[in-house]
Image 1 (cartoon, rainbow, N blue to C red):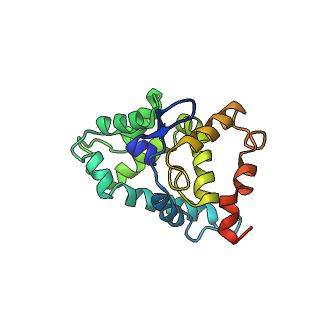
Image 2 (cartoon, rainbow, N blue to C red):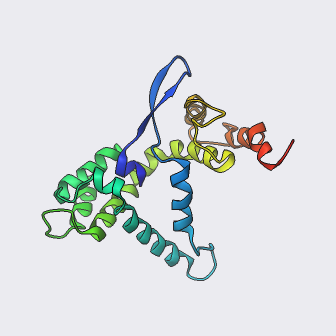
Length: 201
């Protein structure tokens, strides 16, 4: 959702020489409570877990579009077409005519985007777009290694920039997303930083 809502951030890397690169805008301190909210009460294969997950996603999206950061970035005075086009632009996706129209149609005949529920549905339409998922999968996968194993942002100490993130993203891309062949997960779980989370090695 963050990508569709806000686009990418810019981060510094020294891999192959100093440069800037687009990096995920979501930060660990945002990601953690958001995922806890989405996963609340969900136990896979227990009860009606799929409906619980969908209910949580709907509630999260409704909350997300009411945050001041979102309302500042995407004013309710935008027309539905402007709102949807901005989301797709942030996402870096050229939508099909059908995908674009489906998101616009969430607003019915409204001329602005003040309907909070419609804003949340349109945001999900864009955030869950298959093209966006495909484009962002490797970037998100690398980010999850930092969030999940190291419990930090890629540019937090012990790193000072996104060089490590870019290294692993390049390696994952080189192996066409095959994280086993890229030995990425193995590298994270055998790293001193990860192992020190559980006490002296």
